[in-house]
Length: 279
Image 1 (cartoon, rainbow, N blue to C red):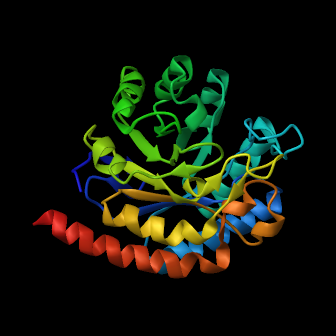
Image 2 (image 1 turned 135 degrees about the vertical axis):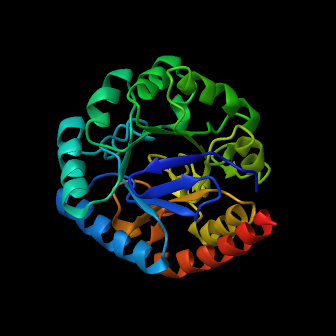
């Protein structure tokens, strides 16, 4: 486990050898009531597991496999919903942006701005995100090597904002398949920025169902354990109370009913890894 810098988020301390933190939520805001219910349930589970927690949900899935795919409520309505969850539940919020023009309005509501993997080399988007002063989580592209992420982080840091998180979400391995190279975690940590493992997108089969993506959720737990054993600073999980009915990425989502058991295992493993790293 390589030492990374600490990022403050309210009372939370991310990276820097602090406790494993969790970013979790549904893939997309389906309805206001569903997003609120998921935020409340996941927050309770994270609290029971003793993990610092950031709620995530997208207001727009701009890169769906098909035009037929559900995209979400859009920027204005999505930010209204996320803002209510933040204020009423006192939760830090993460959501993704797709255009430079979205950075400023999203930063007014959300604590963490996420740059999607497909867009992680778009300089104008990275600069706009960095200029907000918010924490910026950048997903490693499926087509990029882990050592290239230093260049990506440099673009954000050039704005004077060094509150940067780098996230691994798998690499393209032939058609409609992803694999995870565990070496990516320590390599990206050498940048000095906290590294997160997006486990559920790493088990995705992109476009594997023709008009939508498939998934192999049976590999979520073993991959999550591998990432934590390798010393990641945080875990990213998309979870749903009924994955079969989810409007986006259900096939690779972790059933909510399985979340607590997984987090308890990951917390225990993380504690051991951090003790080893402290010696």
